[in-house]
Image 1 (cartoon, rainbow, N blue to C red):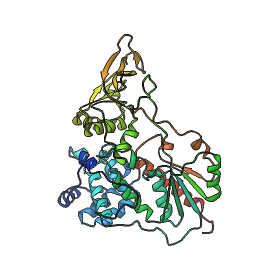
Image 2: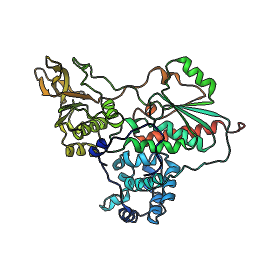
Image 3: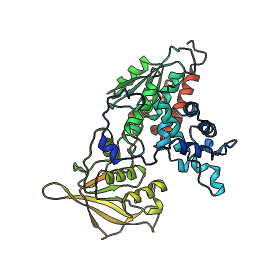
Image 4: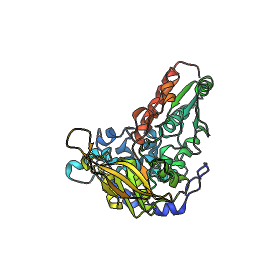
Length: 428
């Protein structure tokens, strides 16, 4: 079972039943067979394609010799969230997409599943992150936000002897790994188990702490020697149409967070998801697994313009999700007693320019009893704009606009190394 998670969280057996792993874990024989397919390339393109530059041939070779603890430590040296990334990374367009096997018309090495195999072994046996120095530094660092960027930054600094505090406004750490990634990709307990490993380095976590004004920032500046800002993106963009304030209109991230961490199993029978990015796909698939009989993604452009990854789109079709192309929501209509009745849309024309335009007189209605907008997130306002100066560092979605978990990890580690460098020559 591994070490218990030292964060207050009650796993939900029904959620686990409804959301089995998208890519089941390898057993020993499968892992050894797959590891021995690897060519152990010199200057491996898979390692170059990974934003954290994990030494992929090295960790796979160690799996092949059944040195699983050594394999995991190789992964963790580059990516402290190697367990999460093994599950959520879009490997098809990163490491596996760069595998030389593709040039021989063969399946790429299953790098993600091999990485998970090594990391699960490590965590289930209570593996601990190593220190990178015996020196204890006097400098104190605070990380705002407890998502992947801050976790990577805090771990690297703690391994190098700094005192690190992570402050988070929500009750659980992990950011989108805990709250926003679909359950069939990454379960909340698996995210929290990884955070527990970082806490074991001595990183202090403080929950229910939000930065509301200039005075809050001034207090941090007075107490800490460096401040890392890893606050992610802000709230999801609202669906600004009549009826969008109905209680059965729930944004995609709130919907995912509720079923992952609050046991919110309630879902409509006919669900419409507005938007077609990866988060929209996650929400639509989740609605199907939670019992919705009809789930439709409404998108104002065509299939060829789909912002989600192609493999996510194919997966959604297998889950039974329908797609309504060239449709723009214009209003949500309700029954007299209150429940949602239909989503009114207008057909869009994408042949007259780069931006689709409504087709006059083409309005139509889609039956639904729940609407899930997934139309992107807004950036944070004053806080991110205010956090500039010699003490401030930043990374993750608040900087890159919302990329992958592995990109946030890379940002956090780079920031940590920059912080370390800033104190070179300063007395410990």
